[in-house]
Image 1 (cartoon, rainbow, N blue to C red):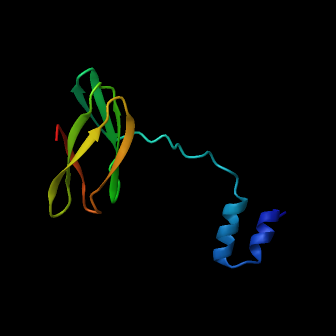
Image 2: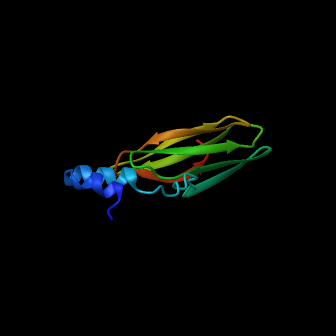
Image 3: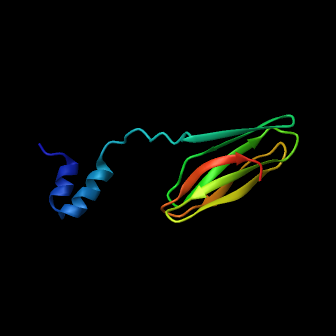
Length: 117
């Protein structure tokens, strides 16, 4: 005997049938959304250190930081694309945890970080 889902799909076009099959398919486990950073960097400074982490994005990369220092910490972020290499300064206020997005285009990425700006 054919299931109700099969009987519903039998009278429809292939495209609609595929969509309906997804709707009646049993639920699967949700994907793991706890992304782990691919890169990290730490800077020592007065009173502790500042930790940075990032995963390279397709057009932009968001760098997350947590500054445990008693002063503002700064790093130069070296970015590169197919044609150029450039530096941008990331200033992290004392005791703050936040992030900053860097635009590097489709062919670019963060190459490295250098203490100070």
